Length: 306
Image (cartoon, rainbow, N blue to C red; front, side, top):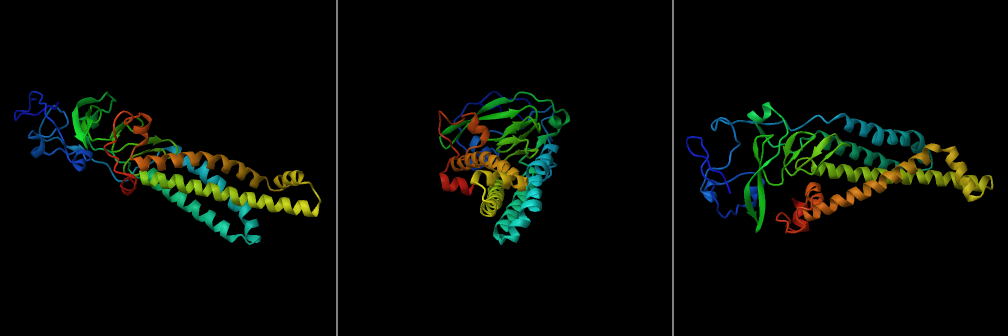
């Protein structure tokens, strides 16, 4: 059921008709009059003419939690590694481990910055909605058929727009976001269509950095243990404890990076799975397609290409 608009600005009677739109028009929020034979839906406003929209810059400033994540969880362990462990590895001829760890840290920093500062795909709001940003419930306008699957079309009262398919309203940012995945407090930004690839890259390279930092620190502890075992005739367990006491920074990095690596492994694997089936975290958690087919799933290879 769709509400048309008459020339005098009043709403016409609801029209019920079978709808089947091209996927590119549906996902972009465009409605072709030649297909529907009615005027496209427009944001509701006191004036039906001259409705303008508020557009956003390509980059945003992340919240303070993103900076805290970088300083405490990524930068501080890396600085400890390069200050306390890397010199010993270089002295032992393990330049490759140090270089790979350094490169993985740089890539993790780069992708974190891109994910945190890139505008996630904010849907432009109407001027009327931008004036008063009080969150309100969305209205269901009707349904469209995408690849044989009916999809609900909603109007966001808060943003004053017809919400594109797969877009959702983020409460943290109080905006509708195209292909909204989730709000990430570790980045201080929402994850949506425009910064999702950067988010996945950030998770993947941070996992790689944690793995190489843990392996490098563990290698250093193993060399210390072997030296103590051979020079002072310590038992293996006692030699390991002595090595941890000799280099507590290495022991701390091993414990921290192993725990972080396990969590990142689960998160990274989960998002690789979501990419393969072309679902967002929001859709998967809400079980949007548990009792119906996913109309956006085009197969693993095409999903990855998208």
